[in-house]
Image 1 (cartoon, rainbow, N blue to C red):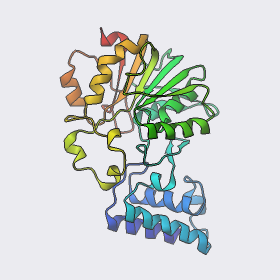
Image 2 (spheres, one colour; image 1 turned 90 degrees about the vertical axis):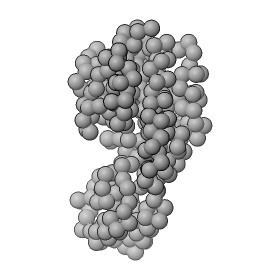
Image 3 (cartoon, helix red, strand yellow; image 1 turned 45 degrees about the vertical axis):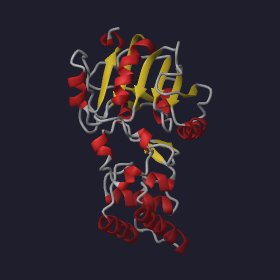
Image 4 (tube, rainbow, N blue to C red; image 1 turned 90 degrees about the horizontal axis):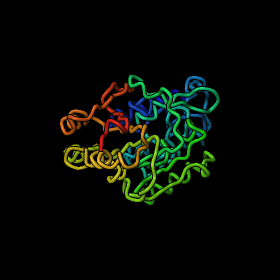
Length: 296
């Protein structure tokens, strides 16, 4: 297997592939494809690195390496799986590949149950929501993590794309959460009139127009409607900020991911006291706001 992995890394680097859909480099991408190609779990490389491969498994893994180069599809699409921590989700090209920093706030505790913890904000203290909204749910990953974190809560998972909701349905069913997660087709809040939530999560589209024009091929494989958000990348976030007060409970919390748009956001809303929790990439990629901070 070691020789096959080395071959994959060499070919990926020579092809100039782009990453960011579950891995950040050629080695990790090749390891993921090789392990899955030979039928092994994606996190068990070292234990099997020097195992011999029969012809069938060798060719299956080599085929995936070739597909990755030829199609420029992220490995997640070739394997129909994406991982957020220990949690696996089905994905295909109807949804973006899950990679939200918000998922980092769901910390694993005992058993399979995570716990929401938002570092540097104090928002993890006393938070026990019973009604949760995941806007722009895509594959349903954040809605599922929220439902696992708060077993007494009901979750609305919203997306405008029928295809995305079909993918989300598959994941919700896989986790046995159909009784607690309601999938709703809606353009942000448009179909949610009269509902209120203790916690609203959103990883909305936030790529600005100039960046959309220069995206690597791997990102162009994802649905454009799940990425593009106007000239400055904040069209969807503006709508969320304008409408969230009507849907947040009195002590509700809003958590939104915005990519690299912090400066533009703070210039547009100097009156809002955004909090910027730490993520693996540092602060500035996700903001939180309490209902009382939004006014109106």
